[in-house]
Image 1 (tube, rainbow, N blue to C red):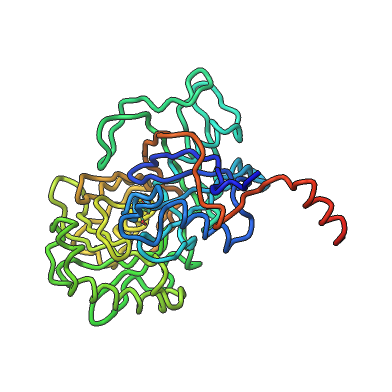
Image 2: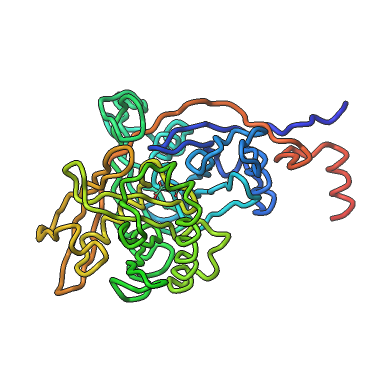
Amino acid sequence: MSRPSQTAIPCTLMRGGTSKGPFFLAHDLPSDIPTRDRVLLAAMGSPDVRQIDGVGGADPLTSKVAIVSRSSRSGIDVDYLFAQVSVDRPLVDVTPTCGNMLAGVGPFAIERGLVAPRDPTTSVTICMVNTGTVAVAHVPTPGGEVTYAGETSIAGVPGTAAAIRIDFRDTAGSVCGALLPTGNTTDQLDGVDATLIDNGMPMVVLRASDLGTSGYEAPAELSSDQKLKARLEAIRILAGERMGLGDVRSKVVPKITLIAPPQSGGHVMTRTFIPHKCHTAIGVLMAVTVGTACIFPRSVAHGIVPLQAEAVQRLSIEHPSGEFSVEFQVERTGDSLKVIRSSLIRTARALFQGKLLVPTSVWVGNQPLSSTDVSRTAQHA
Ligand code: NQM
C-alpha cells in the first residue's frame, strides 16, 4: 500500500476577538519543537506573502496558532501556548502571548472535553504558557453548552456574539520580568521620550507627535510609510536591549504604540505596530499594557490622559476601528502603582472543525507503529 502524502491533524479554526487561527490539542502536534514549528509553518502556508499553500490569512492577525492542553498545574484548568507564525519569514515566535486568541481558548477547551461546562457560565482558568501568567475566561454555557450567539459587539468584528469576560491578575512583567523593565516611567531612545512597559505585552509607548505623525492616520498609510517604520524599528531595537529582550530583530516583541489625544470621547487614541505593520485595532494585552502606561504618573501619556484617583478605573482606548475598554483595579503608594486586576470583554466563534492537512514530507504524524516498525524497534532495544 502506498504511503499517504498528507498528514491529517485534528483542528478547530476559531476567531478569537479580532484575530483568527487554528486551535490544536497539544497531543495532536509533534512534541519536538523544530518539527512542531515546521508543521505550523506548513499549516499556515509560510513563508509566503499570500500564504497561498496554507490556511493563514496573509496578515499577522490571521497567522496565529493556539495549542491547548489539560493543565497539570494546581488551580489551572488548561495550558495555552500561543504561536505567532510569520507570514513572510520562516519564523515561529512563542515569546509573547495573544489575548485575542485567548478568547477562543475557553470555548475550545469546553468543546474538546478538557473542561466540564456549568450552567449558565463556565469559568476557565488558563495558564498562558508563553508568559507563565494566568487569565480567567468566563464563557457563556447556558444549559451546559457553549453558546456563541449574543448581543455583544467588539470593534473590528461585524455583528454581535456572546460576551466572554476575561480577568487578568498577574500580568506585570510577563516577558521582561518587571512592569517597568528599565525602572523608569520615561526613557529617551534615539532622542524620543518612551515608556517601556510590560503588563502582559512588552510595549514601547511613544507620543505620535514626537515621530512627526498625528496619531490619527489610517493603518495602511502608516504601514506603507517606510521612513517612519525604519525609525520605529531603530527605536524598537534599542528598546529591546534596554528591556532585557536582547536582539529583537527576529522577535515580534516589543510592539510599539503611538499615542495622541482622544477623538471620540475616550481617554487616548492609539496606533499600534505589531511590530512592522500597523494594527487595524489594538491587541488585548497591548490595550492592557498601554492603558497601564496611561495611568502611571510621569509616563509619556502625561498631559494626554488625565490621571484618575479611583481604585477601579475604566479606560477607553481609541484605535483605528473603534475603542477598547479595559477596567483596572489599582493600588497606588506615592508614585508607585500596582495593577491588581484588569478585565475586559471579547467575543469568539468556532468557524470550522475538521482536520488540517500538512505534507508527510514535513511530518508523518503521531502514527501507531506498523508491525515491521515494532519488530525493528524490538531488535534495537
Ligand atoms: O496584545 C496582535 C492581536 C494581537 C495580540 C499581535 C494580542 C494582545 O490583536 O494580546 O491580542 O500582537 O500580533 O491579536
